[in-house]
Length: 418
Image 1: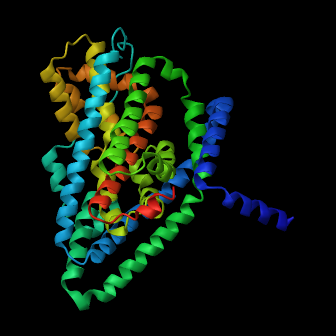
Image 2: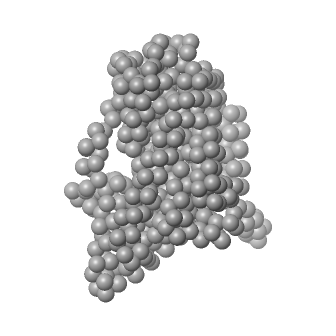
Image 3: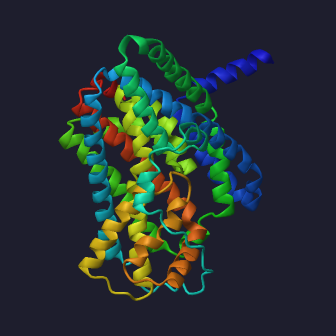
């Protein structure tokens, strides 16, 4: 009997992880639709999986950033890498918002929709940009690590890594410790990822069982608009970046990132997916650690292509539902405000829902109207959140590939094995 179990276990592990995750996702959908509300009882398995991933995020980010900077050998290289990274992130976000607004104006998802019966939702004000920037500098680095404040962790890790470089010989023991620490955290991440199929099964079954597709029927045009926008951002924006700018195969890129995309879709959290994104970037895309450890943690915090697109579409949807005619200036205001809101969005499920107030306020919606829109969106936000998170994570990996290519930190032979 024990030999049979061992053979079955080996056979399971021999199946590619992405295939196991897809199988779990499909089974979760079936079980959720059949079981209905009862699927809530297995949600804890998915929550446990997310906690396991969250457990490794902060130490992984810290040690890999420090290790990556030390490997640079020259702190000045960090400046050029950072400028390119932020520039491309802003560029892809701008394209995502443009796609979303164009499709919202074309398909008119809010026209004729009656949302007055919705129960008003809680409106949370967006964090002011100045306060957000101030939060990057931790008053207590240990507290930042404990609280999981990723931007503050990145800031301190960069300073720490540069300091180790500048003390040269005296810093070698710390450098060796950080390199070993990065390897240890990646190994733990690999172990945690073996739980992915079970976590994905539970999360998808819960979503399908408690929310299903019934709620989406109420806003089918909005759902189709968001879905098409996500597809266009993936295929057109990132596909074009791969094919025509980087001269790489888009198909090989998407094959390489599928594990991260599937996990992002299941968890609806860029932060929870970060360890997997870093793993596939290095092992599948051939991006060297110096880029992986700096570009991806930053992207999980500030690069929200899917979120920006979604917030823009919902803002136009709200204006249409309330009969507000939008001018070109209004669309530009939505685009500009959405960029700032997306940067300030926490990389956790559903966070963007409560950050729409700042955008809707720019086009003349009252606080009461905004609350009604949020109350209307909430019941079916989770499935849409899953899609836009997959876009966010794919954007992070696309930009990391571009930066690695331009910085000569990309192993194209490894990339082409996908």
